[in-house]
Length: 105
Length: 155
Image 1 (tube, helix red, strand yellow):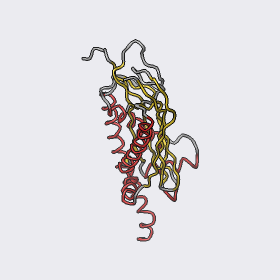
Image 2: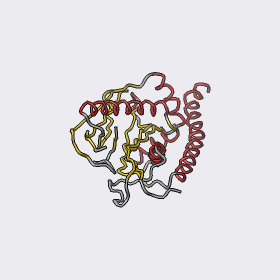
Image 3: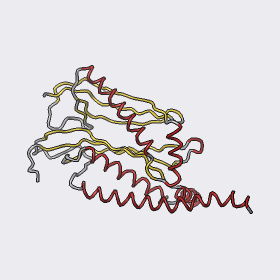
Image 4: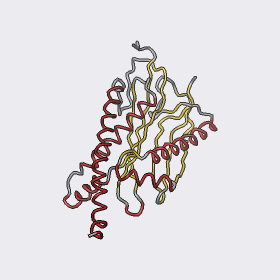
């Protein structure tokens, strides 16, 4: 599965469009990570626990989008975008969306 | 006396401690960023979608990098003071600069063989600290499409 965030695939020709595919996940942080983060907050710097959490959820959102694209028979997703929104306190939704297409091999 | 110390001394001590370690850590981070930026300078990053038409593309794939950073207590305190007088909050500027550069570097490091990255998008979101709702930390995501050319002489 090829992913790009431009409206074509550099070096390849698109032969069929399947329309929008998307994947999302809502994740909450857990207490242990929160505690570590609040300690790290005193001196500043990277909050690794949160970085990992957001990376994991983004990966899952992309995976769900890819599964949807595969079901349609696509072999690439172009124009992929990410969006993050906080649903409730301590929980965030990560959304990935794009256009499923088929390229010549 | 002891009461005075615990009510004012402890928070003050925290702020001084945060100032010293925070400044050291930040400087170290910036040095690290500069070193890695130099090593990856040969990969240009564009915000446009165009790439040279003349070259044949071997492979293209999406790359991304993300980081969550927070500022120290001292800078948070400075920013609070800034809220009274207004003006540019420099302590937050350096936080965001740190986050963005780190995210772009991680994106580049995901596929170091790339020759060009087009359509760079940067997204910044703040992570609230629960009840107090102060913006102490920020998440930066950088993503783009990395391209590797087919027929460029590689040294």
